[in-house]
Structures are given as structure tokens and as C-alpha cells.
Image (tube, rainbow, N blue to C red; front, side):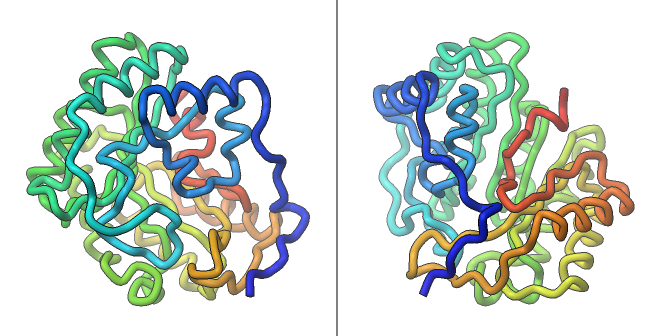
Length: 282
């Protein structure tokens, strides 16, 4: 049974001219956004502002996390035009900050790192001055894949830890907490000046001590930017919500995070990994 949402988690549905324009553009170009695939609660706000998180490597993930609404199974072949189509769309929309993420593609030798690199380069070529953030999978901690993305020189590299360590076996059975931390550490080892980012969700039954331990682990991995948000159950088939944290709870965690030394923190019930992403850079 899905729990009733508290008032602070109720948001308006999409609407407005820019929202419709964004939806039409994505369908015409046959592009995907994580905003739609993951049923993000901020889609109306972001689309209404002409902002989107583009989803590359198709829309079928090779992993099956208990919280995620993205399709999983056997992915289709890669769309060779995808990097240019995204760059074209960024130009059409006049975006100054764009986020590129992907499904996990364990079926590809490089996990899709080459497509990330090509997409970054195409955007740079066609959109002078546009800032680029990438939200990458763990690439199975392959250092060559990470090097490929770093060499393309995005402005920010994000890799989400998603949940506290003790919940990985249930919520992220095909992921690995320590592997994800090693990805973030490796990025900084390869390029110390690269801005890194991570985030996680609350509401699965974690404790305050576990939340603080997760923040400490991320800070110890030299992560610059942090996001913390409330998990919302997409369907009855997904992991149930154990607790709805209040806006005051999130403000408390934000204060703790800043005290640990994070440069920028977004913490709130409706915060997602790319919510107000540009604020950390501009």
C-alpha cells in the first residue's frame, strides 16, 4: 500500500508554453530525459524553465534497483545520432547549463563512457559557453572509462551513492557502496580540479547515524557538491516508503553537511540530483 503524501510533497502537474515546447522537442528528436523516465516531481518547474536532464544510451537499464522507475532488461542498440541530436536540442533551447546522464549499460565494454565523451564534445562544439554536468553510472569502477569521461572535460562529474551502505543489498543489489565511493575518489585522483558531486535519498528506513556516516564517506572521498532528497515510491512494485522527512529535517542535514565541508548542498523533500544544479557552478 502506497502511503499518502504529506502536503509539502504535493506539486503541480506540468503546464505552460515552455513545458509543452520541451516535451514536443524531445519527442521530435526521439530523445529521453531522466525527468520523465524517473517521474521526477520537479519536472514541471524544470521543463517550465527550459531545463532538462538528457538521458543517453537508450532508456533500458541493465540493472534493476528497487527505487527506480526506469525500464530494465535488454537494451536496444545505440543510437549513433544521439550525441548530435542532444547538442542540437541544447542549442534550440538555448540552455546555459545541461545535465547528461544515462541508464547503466553493463553490456557495453566501456559502459557507455565513449558516448558520454562524444556527447560532451558535440555540445561544446555547438554551444559555446554552455556548462555541462554529467551524472555517470559506476562503469564497474573501470579507470579507463572514467579517464575517457574526464578527458572530455565536463564542468562537473556526478555519481550518486543513492542510499546508505546498509541498504545496498536490498535497494541496490547490483551496485556496491564501496565501489561507488572508489569511483568518486578516482575522479579526484585523476584530476584534482574536477568538481565532483553525489547524492542520496531518504525514506527507506535509514537512521540518522547512517545518514551522517554516508555524508562523511562522501566528504572523505573529496566530493564537492551534495544533494539529499526524499524517496517517493513510483509504483506499488517498488520499495515502500518507510518515512517522510520534514523540510526541517532536511535543513538539519544541510547544516551538518556544510559543517563537514561540502562546498554546495541542496537538501529538501523534492530535491533530486540535478535540482538547481547550475547554482553550484555559477
